[in-house]
Length: 232
Image (cartoon, rainbow, N blue to C red; front, top):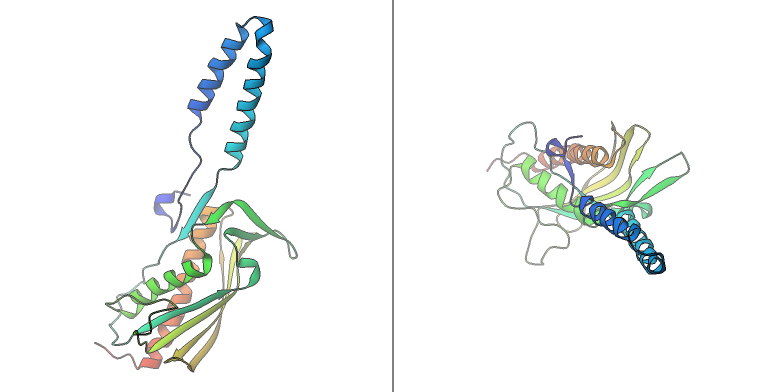
């Protein structure tokens, strides 16, 4: 997938290797021309370099972020203040590594493909950006916990119970609520989305970005219904 057109991007990638290979080639040539009594320490040096190089390359890690999804239409502006959070995750998702499902009973925790930020905080920020666009808000949406001086009209809480790739699809299950003020619940919903996806991590995270966009669509529509769609 072309990362320039993707809604996901790796923040780090493996470095190029020509400099290491060229250095290694020159070192081997020198060892070949070295008299035998002096070869042993040189050979030990080569072994150490090879082991170090292999360890370095095996530890290369990529870090990913999902991106906001622009809504299809320009929304009317609402005269409300919305806060997002807390966003919580089921236990197996509470890690930096990206998790994919390998079978109905087994998951794989990717050792070198990771989220660039804690997933719960990342989802909070992503939902806030998406909702701001969908509700036509001029001010940014605060994420939990916000300062006590901030008064919100609607608070969105989300609990993610499934967010994972399996075979050729990505699945998202989210329980979310909208609170009117600090504690009064006005809406509660379960959103379940599945979307076809490729298998490499760029494609998986790209698909996840779009799924969070669809979740944001549902939340924004409910907020509009509750607010009476007050136009600023």
